[in-house]
Image: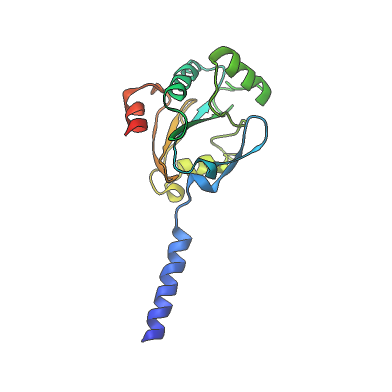
Length: 179
């Protein structure tokens, strides 16, 4: 009987570890300069992950993102921008051109990462996690356009997302940051 109980416990632990959900902290991405950026360094912070583009009708959202960063960024909250060229080829530039554009036009000082793909066959693993319930344990979603915003809690778990047209300074975004 003890042997059966022990084997049952081992089986349950094995199954649980196989199905344990990943967290944001399991990923390392490249920053805009091409250096590794382990997302595990963000433990204890709320994280807003945003796919961005420089030639989009929603590009002025950089201003709102920077406003959020200036007001709330630091020890408890961070924004991470991921330039993408998935939607109408609205981010054709190199990482250097993107950084220059963001700095000159919007004064962006929040962390920007290297350009990635957020959908399709070359979807970045982070975005596969963000958009697949089987991986994130919360929801399936599609990145529908530039400036979709994903909310990650202080434990590295996906909380949900805001659609691209939701402005960064929307009261629901601010309520999530400050709750």
